[in-house]
Amino acid sequence: MSTEQDLINLRARVVELENRLDFLYKKLGIEFSDNPNFVDARIIEFLKKGNKLEAIKVYRELTNTGLAEAKNAVENIETRLGL
Image (cartoon, rainbow, N blue to C red; front, side, top):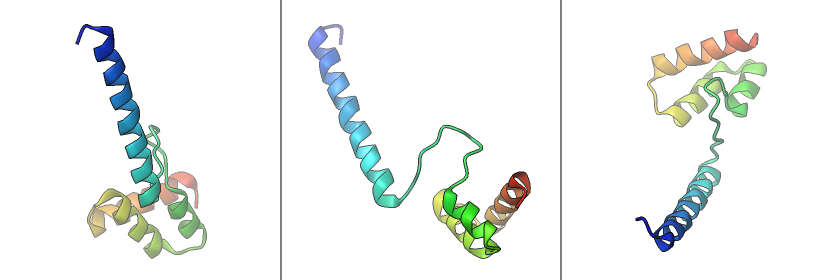
């Protein structure tokens, strides 16, 4: 992997993988954030409308967590954002 051609090939592969990942995010309706405090806009909107059940549902879909864990997480989000 020390040749220039190997580096070019690796860079091309990384670009291809990034494009595939972007496609999957768009297809699944997921926003990527490297911010650990990021909250999906749908969860915020449901909480603003007073629809905690839908916010929990979205959280579960995004994180593949159980009901109790999702409920606690959404309530923490609600508190943290002052909603």
